[in-house]
Length: 597
Ligand code: FES
Ligand code: MG
Image (cartoon, rainbow, N blue to C red; front, side, top):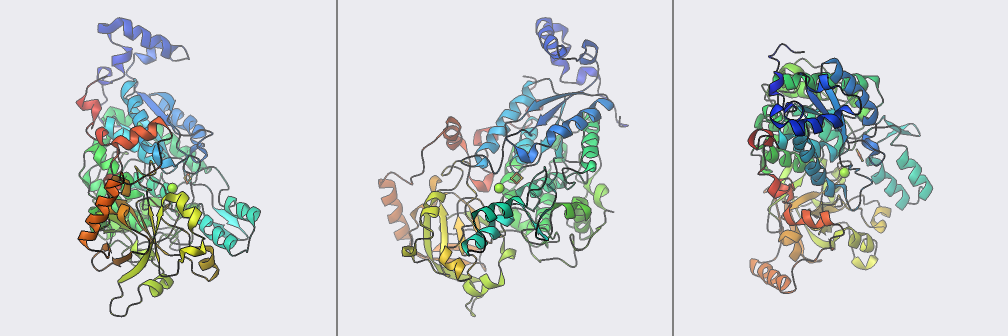
């Protein structure tokens, strides 16, 4: 137990369920059910904190499935520190398995977890995080309820290998598609090549959204130092689970809550770490939602303000060469934060779950392998953060300018008078099905200077927002060696893709955004001098097209397939503000503001 003052048993919220003489009927009813599987009356009425283990692993969530094993170690840690563990399931979210998109379920898992943490006798909670959306869903719920909470990553998979080369989750798909399109591998070869990237339990081993969000959970202070990067099968991962269990009991005694940790400074730290690690373009969506649920004012423009000039120092795919195991052996998140601290880019006073500041945790962290985590002075790329673009098609969209390739630059940004702007002919697709149907049709006349647009793929249009903006070129261009076209859209992009798309456009076409009035063959200008994207038509023409669209009943998108799709569409916000459930945002810190249920 820590040195800090222990909470007396009357201060534990679980006592309202288990030891409440003023409500003897209900107390007895609560107790008899929690005693019927082995807990004792003595323990349930003691000063032992009751700790929830929010279990995100299941057969439907293979990325997080190893948490079923890790929970045993979390329990051991909780018990050895004098707590009582109660494990319960969280709505599964499997990034690769959930249709139409896992994005639909982040807010659903969030809602369910809020009800559990708030409505059951829990004094603290361990959040078992991992696969892309499980991390934000868990953190958002902990923020909303605001009882002591600690996250535990499941850890990345071991490195994938194929013919002596590393193969990384997701990233290999883009490469395999090119090989398939070029006829270098067949269908079975394609599957074998992709499967080689997933050799063990754990989440994606690339710097996709999972590694990003787990790293940021640590950078925010919500996980123990070094917790994010340990591969799932390693014994250190089990030991980390045990320490996490021990620590949450202490946190209850210290009353260390998410609101003490998730401050504005913590979010600024996370934005900078995201640039340094080459983090996913999904990070702004999830962190902006988390900030709203804890009551921190964070604008999408602040990702550029704080993050753009930070260099990329982590050499992981898709931006670099290495994978999760290498990241761990090179020093993980503390080594990255340590480099940023040396250059004054971290608010060192930000508190973390171990009761120390991030400065104290990471100041002396060293890089163990400079091939994988580069010293700040020798980065892979300068200015690796996001740009936030706007114009007459949307009010904000995100772009990772640093991943623009030389080939891409020469093809699009080829005007010697202005090497930061280009114009192209728009090719507009209405959702991923339309794109798949038409992309290879030669009648589309797509050439290497076109700009592909994806609309109807935002939080409302494709409920939850689909990861479809980075569109593959037509086969006939791939065969000519053209690997990518400029892509813009109101959907998301997989964190495992290194494409310089302009994405997360808000408002989306389905929410009144002007992507809805764009037409194939329009000229569009992208100007990185001014961070603008504009369709080159007059305001009058825009108004005319808008009136015509409204007269025709507005922008069309597919019907709801499930009750949740309909409910979420009615209340979800746009991606610039985190695609949060708008009426959930008002419920902040409810363990304090709403009292007991
Ligand atoms: Fe689950 Fe990548 S699909 S972590
Ligand atoms: Mg994804």
